[in-house]
Image 1 (cartoon, each protein chain N blue to C red):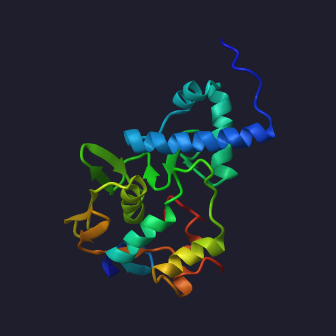
Image 2: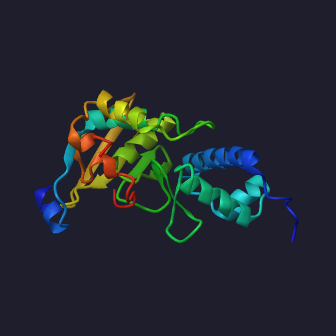
Length: 63
Length: 159
């Protein structure tokens, strides 16, 4: 991963294991097929990240 | 040229945009690709030009779709991608493209189906496969998020 980042002049970000990623995939998009969908507010999105353990500065949605 | 009526007014426009958005998602789910403006126009008895306005509104106003730059063609209806990506999703005979591994898994979650995601290690090219069955995920590897969460929508194509 370090080599991949270096090749692209990109700083390493954060890694996530499959289990929490799957949990996030299930919660983040669960309303997309609904007619009344609206984009979740930043606090709502932050709560979804928190719920799967993605916390800390990298996962913060506010500057 | 057929007359498809006056352009909808504001309230109707929002209601129409909601129905178009849902139709786009169902289209992706059913076919694995995005509908074109002409196909949407036919489905909603609008002119392609009226559809283009709706798509523009969905992309910029509601942040519900991503259009290919400089066009009215749908690029993403997250988690679906209209263009081939490195994340092929399969369930039975059905296939979709995810924008990233997160989105690829989300397609299976959204449709509530068992399936798989086929991708490759970005560094060595070895095939990576993730399986989803009975609500559980199995596979090797980790996902790398290069962009901090606060910047995900600054350039969604890069993210």
